[in-house]
Every structure is written in C-alpha cells, then in structure tokens.
Length: 263
Image 1: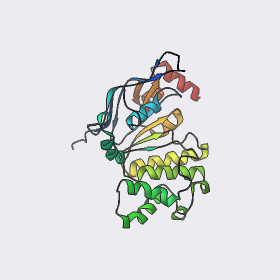
Image 2: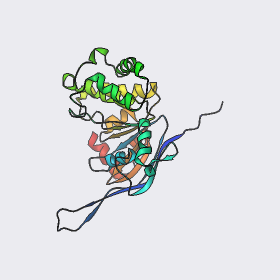
Image 3: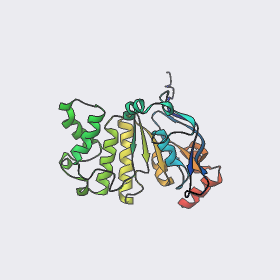
Image 4: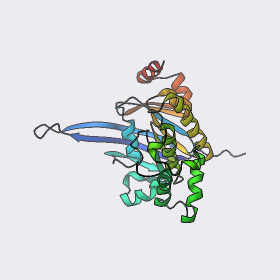
C-alpha cells in the first residue's frame, strides 16, 4: 500500500520584520527587529504550535503570514504561491483560504450586527454559497460550533464569552479555508470554557480537514491541541519538533524555562 506523502501547506523562509521608530521629532531613528530570520513549515492537516511569551515575535509572525504586515526580508509561500509578493488584490482573493480565529474580546464582533448577520457577512463576501442557500448555511455553521439556530436574532451583548468565541470560530470556518491561524483563541476565557473551545477546535480540524497554526503562550493549551511545536524567543525560533520531543526533552534553555514556569 502506498503511503500518502505529506504536503507542505505553508512555508516560511528566512523571514525578518524590522520596525523603524523615533521617540520624538529630535531623536535618532532606531531599528527594532521584531522577527529575525524565521523559517518553518506547516504540513497539511497538522496543528503547529507557535509558542513564546509576550514580545517573542509570534503575533508579528502571524501578521506577516496573514499579510497584515509585509516582510522586511524573506518569503512566505502558501500552497506553492509566494504570498509575500502578491498585490493586495491577489491577496484578497486568497484570503478565503487563510482565516484567523482571534483572541476573545468583547469588541471583536460588531455590536450592531445579529448573529445571523455576522455569519452571513463572510458567506457573501467570499461567495461561498448562492443567496438562496444562505439560510441553511448559517444553521449549518451554528450546528458545527455547537450553537442553536435560536441564537440567530441575538446581538453579541446577549451572548456569553464562550458563545461569542464560538461565533468567532464560525466566521473563520465560513469561507471553508484550508489554513486557520488561531491567535490565542482561549487565553481570555474562563478555564472551564477553555477546554470546551479546545475540544471544539480539535473536532472541527478533523471534520473539516483543517490545518492550524496555533499561537499561544500557554504550553498546557498547546499540549492539548498541537502535533508539533515551534518555540520563539526574542524574534527567533530557538527550537522546533514534535510535541513529545519539545515537552519531554527540551534542548533550549528558554523552552526549559517555559516548561518550569508551567509547573
């Protein structure tokens, strides 16, 4: 029997991001290296954890992948296309295949839109279904994230934190993406809700054949959901490997520090 060959869905090669800052009109310009010579691959169907404390460069890396920022150096490829060179128009057409699940905040969803409107919006923007199919598709999305159609007329301020995060997830999966960047998706939730959302993400990954780049500062969360882990420190990846290798036999002192602080 022939084994399926693992395919690379995302390739980050020698990527750096520099910011030039000035404290005031009379001060000298200063170069800040937020990300420095970062390289890694994400394999189709896996969940790769990008781990590090605040300021390590992981969120900047995510923004470069999403093209919310442009690389200073290096290249980023998605399914063989170098997206770091694409025009905004070409990138806009690709965005349906690369989505993001944001960290929960009360302001992440438009408070003037109902749940139905919040889910219909990405379906229309990306032309996922025909107009007459919008109604059943909204119900399908709600079912996928464990919510009832009864939530459709509600506004965000009528929902719990866990329900809001489920709507954020539903908006991310609405365009039927191939890759989802999960940016600290459970860090602001109560511990009792975190497990439910992580279980939901695990189930959706399997059911919808998704690939995750999972950004977190919490090794307990990464332990739950990721197949491999890349550790970032001061803008660089200092260690990358399978979940078991990184958590059981860390090599870099910073990884050891993260593990010891988890205890």
